[in-house]
Amino acid sequence: MSGYTPVFSTVFTGTLHGRWPDTGLWLCLLAMADKHGLIDCTPQYIAGVTGLSADDVVGCIERFTKPDPYSRSQAEEGRRLVPIDVARPWGWRIVNHGKYREKARLQAKDAQRTASGADAERKRTVPRSPPVSPAVPLSDSDANTDSDTRKNKRAATPPAPSALVLPEGLPRKEWEEWLALRRKRRWPVDDVTLGKQLATLAEHPTETQRQMINTSINAGWQGIFAPKVNGSAKPKWIPPLSVEQLEEAERLGLNTQEYREKVLAQHRTS
Image 1 (cartoon, rainbow, N blue to C red):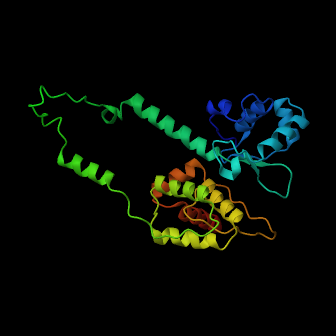
Image 2 (image 1 turned 60 degrees about the vertical axis):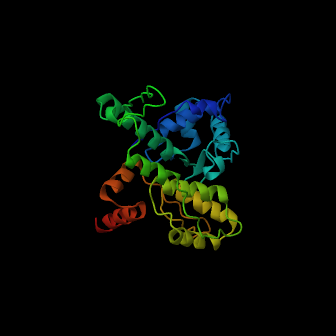
Image 3 (image 1 turned 180 degrees about the vertical axis):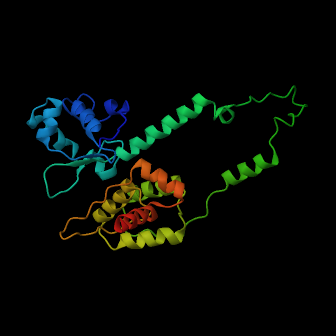
């Protein structure tokens, strides 16, 4: 079953600007991807669908799978595509598919709330009226309440310093991106939780650490895990949860790992 991939104007203002047929093929690949961001077909099939030559398709895909140091997203080192299975020369996953699909979902949700008036009260602002003169204080409605004062005080209080010691060679950029994701999703960022993740990372070289962190970010995992080997030297790739599955996990009050275990258990009993 085909999926849905939104297209934002930034596709034309980034590093694909002025590059043809890369721009045209990229839009076609976005439309061909399923809801997990997978394009599981050969270059010859893509050429037949798009009208481009097979050589053009192969050339574009080779460029899409190379690192891009100027990309807005440095997941997978800026690559647009990564292989589904490195053992075969075709079939790819769109690296930032889930990110932009979620962005489109939130924009649509906000637009729906605005159209229905559900968030009118939240967006309504009352301008402050200045005092008549320096000798006349602000009215009660204009003055800060005790709750506002407490809120501002809490916001101004800096967080307690962390006692964690980051291991030598840790890819700091990827680590900060992972921390930002945890804070955004309100997952624990205490020293005990982070210490366990750092201990896992410290057992591997820097490049493997970078791959482990990026895999966790792309898959929406709460933890960072060592690469799993499935009968060969290559890590076993697990597709990320779809937006619908993430929403269902949220409704059930489960984190992504708990939700995956629940789905696996259902498959075993079916």
